[in-house]
Image (cartoon, rainbow, N blue to C red; front, top):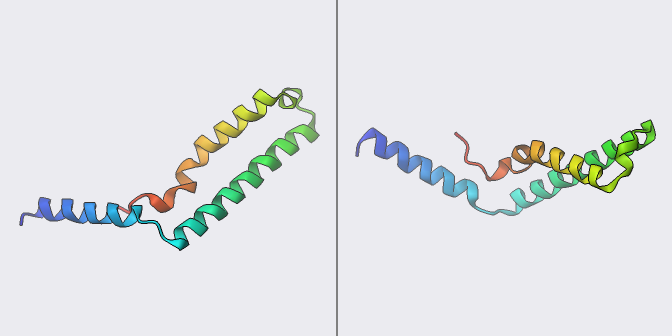
Length: 84
């Protein structure tokens, strides 16, 4: 086998292993999601206490949550990405 084929085979194997669901991965995902939800809720609460008027509107809260989710997505779901 050539080196390239061996490397590709190893990458496929690592990718398949990373996608496997285990109880540990699911627990870590749940904990990371919980921490994320608490942080976003705290951020919205702090902005409300500081008197940011636009945060009182529901669309602003939802857009802030969406931006935070997009930024945090790679961290939250890093368990399911193959290590390189």
